[in-house]
Image (cartoon, rainbow, N blue to C red; front, side):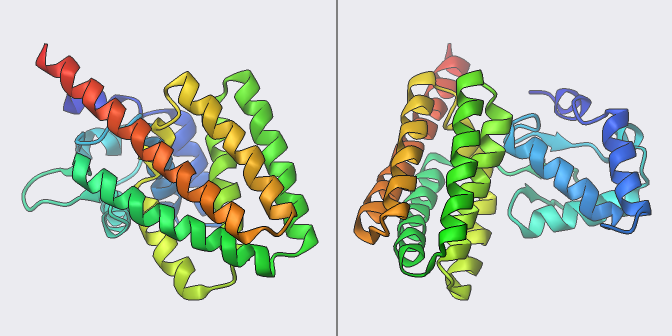
Length: 244
């Protein structure tokens, strides 16, 4: 993807008006609103790994000055989503195959621990909420609406981590998870692997309802291993395509 390709998709009047509107209402700052939208576009692959973010083009298309945009870049760089290079434009981080493998190994352990602890501490109301989100997510899968499916998927995993009730786990989980959200999203590009992931989520809810910590830990660990496998398969396919 060229530099121009990477930024063209960002420039919608809706993006600029929503960010400015949220800021004017005092609900969020302009950089925070911009960061959330750029974060979403990175997750969904509309700003691809390795894509350079041209400040001038982004400012024109977002309808903002360079000051809030640069502040947004600093936020995303702190999260590990983009890299800031001296005298060069910002660039979306592209993880190597080794980075992907190691990140998902650690995330699998964090998800498993989250599930195990959640089974000890979660309330009936929290289980009911996660179950409702899962049903809604599975409906999105039936409609093949991946962006909506993934937003709900992300919320479910986040609720389980919060229900674990461990602040240190929460901190580590959020920091690593932020860096690989775009990879978790793309792990569903293959229809069969997406179908398997949806089935695993039904099993996760069952284990959570039963407060079966050992079972949910095993399911979540396998769930993340399957996601890593899907991402690595996709990277190999991309590499093969570029070499032909």
